[in-house]
Length: 79
Image (cartoon, rainbow, N blue to C red; front, side, top):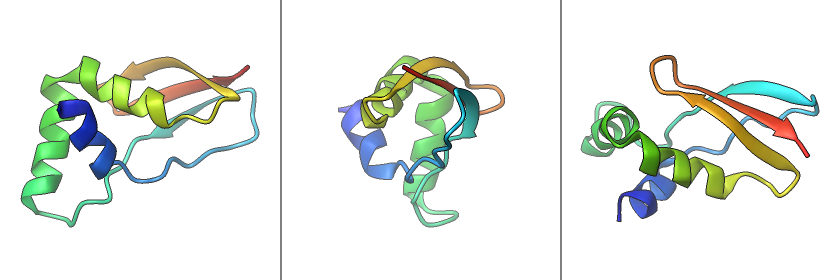
């Protein structure tokens, strides 16, 4: 349930052509809305589910390397 809701709230990722790079994960929710607050609550309190949602939207050529929930940094590598 959390993963599905995070998937609805995730903004498209800023993908690059580098072998390894870091992305800031963003939401497509309206600023100051309940959805935006929910998104950041999931990010801080349900990090495992949040990461699972992020990993599921990565294109097949990218692998999830790490996610730092304190700085909101997603690191991916090209397969």
